[in-house]
Image (cartoon, rainbow, N blue to C red; front, side, top):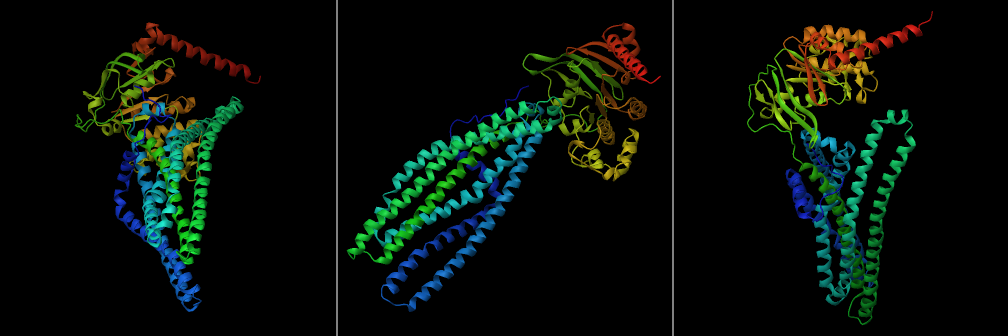
Amino acid sequence: MTTAPQDDDPIGGSYDRTLVRRLLGFLRPYRHALLGALILIVAQSLLDLTGPYLTKVAIDSYIARGEAAGLARIAAIYLAVLLVAYIVRFAQTYILQMTGQRFMRDLRGHVFDHLQRLHVAYFDHNPAGRLITRVTSDVDAINELFTSGLVTVFGDLASLIGIMAVMLAMNVRLALVTFAVIPFFFVVTIWFRRGARQSFRDVRRRLARINAFLQENLSGMSVVQLFGAEERRQREFSQINRAHAKANMDAIFYYAVFYPAIELLAAVTVAVILIYGGGRVLAQALTMGALVAFIQYSERFWRPISNLSEKFNVLQAALAAAERIFLLLDTQPAIVSPVRPQGSREVRGGVVFDDVWFAYREEEWVLKDISFRLEPGRSVALVGATGAGKTTVTSLLTRLYDPTRGRIMLDGADLRALALDRLRGAMALVLQDVHLFSGTIASNIRLGSPISDARIEAAARAVHAHDFIMTLPRGYETEVRERGATLSVGQKQLLSFARALAHDPKILILDEATSSIDTETEDYIREALRVLLRGRSAIVIAHRLSTVRDADEILVMHHGRIRERGRHEELLAARGLYWKLYELQYKEQERGTNRLVDAAPA
């Protein structure tokens, strides 16, 4: 099973309409608020048209005639218009920003929900940092489109149409002279559009790589420092960082050319109005107030055009982000529950592996012809060298992956025919690498399930975790830092064991569950397991053969195959692979004991 990484944008063409239509689906619940904001934006645009016209009236009707009495009235009307425009602008800004926050909340929640339903193989090929970029900065870019882009475009269009209508009504010839500059604007915009879209894609891609590198490096900081790899990792980061900076510089180039070009066109327009309009004023074919109003309208004429250009930039950034988000959302989970699940709700715990083969990559077999039966309430141990395929067996049983060939059955039903929540709800897994979440000790054992405090404490006592928990400042309510940074490896493993037992599974999977626990604690757990495993099926993976000697059946795996099977005494008597593993461990322990004796003071 393979899943292609999403490192580069696979979309070569533009399908802007499709992306915008899909994004609008997330705004449908807020259509009434957006409609209200749209009405307010159009009203604000119309109010902005009154300023230059009032200036014309003040010059032509009062200043030119030397009548000062009417100026106060015009000024009062002007101030009233500004006040109303302020109130309208505040209302539409508040509505848009509130809607944008809710939109981001919904979209992030949708992306996170989809990530949780994706199969594990997807995360094998897509770094966490890159996926974090989808949920954070990509969603922010799309929010910018709606809060200051898509809806406000209508206001800019209303302003542009209104200004053109007023200018034509005031003087058709001067208006047409003013509009003669517009074709040059479209030439500049087309050039900008061709280069900006790709630059935005590059910036997003490089940012995702930075996030992926940072997430990986920060998570493995102890390894980096222990192996003195700081300088090498710094060089790698510098290379990625330079690529991101270059992508931003490419985008800045288009900005640096585009906006000054717009300003230049605006200045040329004012010059044309002054030359042509000034001549008309001297010829007494145009009033001075109209000329001043035309200059003010020309400045406002280019403002919505400049805004539309800026919105186009926002649109390009948002569509580049939307491409990546919808690429993620369009990735279908490979592991899903069937439409009509089979099996009863009551799980007994009988497991059968029937001629199972599995490869993470085609024909690179990790498991070959694996067949065994685990009866309800019994235990099977998997032993073998690293890379033999032991953990892969448990990954298939929990259906994190599906077999490439063969089938796995639970209580006589194929796993692929069972509902995922029923299947995984019947199992508990204890791993060597324990993952703890931010929260309390109790919440890490409970994991959101309706488990009582008494049951949590009983599980902790059973695995001898209760004593060390009670030494913590607040006992079970002690806060756990990220990944349990304040706890020892052994303490985290005991909490993981308590977590599994508290959920009362029918099938308990222990994957090197006692590898980081001292021998005395391991003896306590072995004693507790004899009681706790009654009525449960168990699959135990262990390098320490002393932890599996009581299993009902031991499977010895080698290069993906089951080479030997039997009980502890039977396998030792056969003097095969298991006997060799046992001898190696026994000699290693004996050498360790001798070293301790030799090091002891006389």
